[in-house]
Length: 238
Ligand code: HEM
Ligand code: HEM
Image (cartoon, rainbow, N blue to C red):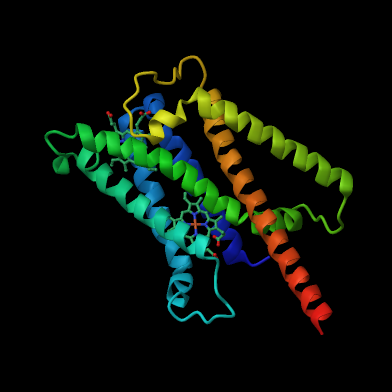
C-alpha cells in the first residue's frame, strides 16, 4: 500500500484522537486541552494540504465525474465548523492565546462547546462516508482476500451493538442539550471513570458512522434498482 496514503491515515487517526481528548476538558484541565486542540488544527492544515487537489478539482469537474453533492456540502460544513471552533478558541483561550481573550466571553464559551459537539457528529459522518475506503485498508492490512459470510455477520452484529450503545451514550452525555448550545451543569465525573467518557464519545461517533454508511448503501441500492426498472421499462416499450 502507498506509504504516503498510510501516513495520511496515521495523521487522520491522531487528529481524531486529539479531537476526542479535547472533549475531556475537565479531566486534564485547560493547558492540555488547548495544546491538544491547537495540535489538531495544525494536523487538519496538513490533512487539507493532502487534499488540495480535491478542492482544486471542484470547479473543473465534468458531469460524468460529479462528486456526491452531500459529500461536498458536508466537507464545507466541516471546514466552516472547524474555522468557527478555532475562532472561538482564540477569544476564550486562558493559556496559549490569553492576550486575545475577550472580557465577557460567556457567549463565546457556549458557542465553542456547542460547535465542538456538532463537529463530533459531522466528523463521524465524514468518516462514515469513507467507511468503504477504511474497510478496504483494514482488509489489506489483515491480509483478508476472500469474503466470509460468518465474519461479515459477526462484524455487522458488532456494528449494530455499537450503534445501540451510541443511542444510550447520546442520553448519557445529554447530547441533545449540548447540540442546542444549552449550558449544562451535569459535568462528567472523571474521578469515577475516564474510559466511560471516551467510550460514550466513540459510541456516539460509531452511531453516526453506522447511520451514514447504511443510508449511503441503501441510497446506492435504490439508485441501481431504479436504473434497472427504467431499463426494463424501455425494453418493454420497444
Ligand atoms: C479539538 C478542538 C477543540 C474541541 C473539540 C474543544 C471542545 C471544548 C469543549 C466541549 C469545551 C467545554 C467543556 C465541557 O463543557 O465539557 C471546551 C472548553 C474550553 N475550550 Fe475548547 N475545544 C477545542 C480547542 C480549543 C482550543 C484550541 C482552545 C484555546 C486555544 C480552547 C479553549 C477552551 C477553553 C478556555 C474552554 C473553557 C470554557 C469554559 O470554561 O466554559 N479549546 N472546549
Ligand atoms: C479530526 C477531523 C478529521 C478526520 C479524522 C478526517 C478523516 C478523514 C479520512 C480518514 C479521510 C479519507 C482518507 C484520506 O484521504 O486521508 C478524509 C478525507 C477527506 N477529508 Fe477529512 N478528516 C477530518 C477533518 C477534515 C476537515 C476539517 C476537512 C476540511 C474541509 C476535511 C476534508 C477532507 C477531504 C476534502 C477529504 C477527501 C474527500 C474525498 O476524497 O472525497 N477533513 N478525512
